[in-house]
Length: 127
Image 1: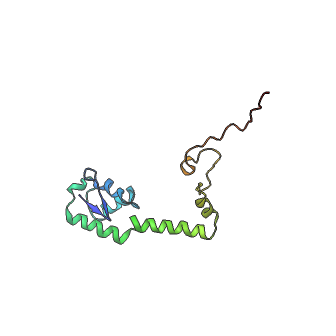
Image 2: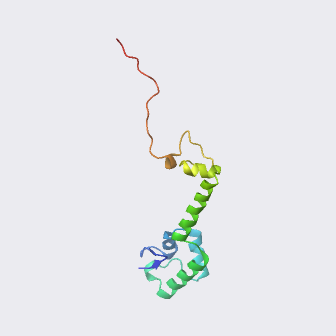
Image 3: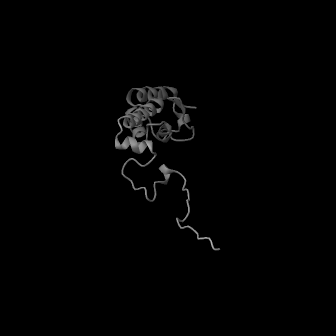
């Protein structure tokens, strides 16, 4: 089983797709890695030899910030925005969309499950 940056890559996937399981590496970066290191992107992860895996590990560690390092950098950036009380920081703090999306409708991913409060009309009791 191929292991890069603390992540086990799935054996049955092509190496081009398997590299995208690393946080911080998408399809375009994985394609670039394969072309730079002259590795066939169609080979399965289980078929990549140990020398090529070591080349991939070295290239990723030198070139990209992945997994834990990237996650801490992102969280530090968000924390900095909150500390300086920027608009984006306030939006992050209130769990609202940051990039100008509407919130009257939609924004369910950020705001969570819909909570129904009632129709707003009061019923009048009959005597």
